[in-house]
Image (cartoon, rainbow, N blue to C red; front, side, top):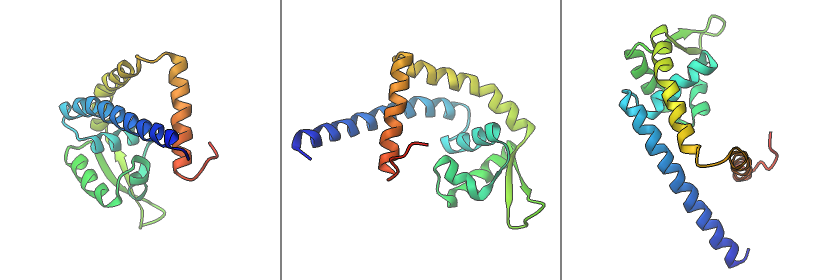
Length: 150
């Protein structure tokens, strides 16, 4: 590693971090305006798009510590957006399931969420988006110690 490479790597890290923060600030403000925190939104969105999920696996799918899942699920259950459902074949497993009220809620806010993300990303052409996706995947896989892209 030479000094020029190190400086460029550090600059890229800072630029990526700032871009990530700016994007999250915009997205999270919209989510907060809808009465959810980002984690609640992530769980609700996961259940809406992927269906019932074992509570034990939700954290890994939305990058959240497992200890926080119970709290988030409790909050969403209080709002009647999700319910806990016992697994019929394994009493140790409990699923989170989106309710009709939760589906109606996510369907009412998700189009605007998508639109806002598209507006943020609209500064890039379709080719630039594809290139950015491939480059971010490459960095992510390498950082995880897995240079093989799936």
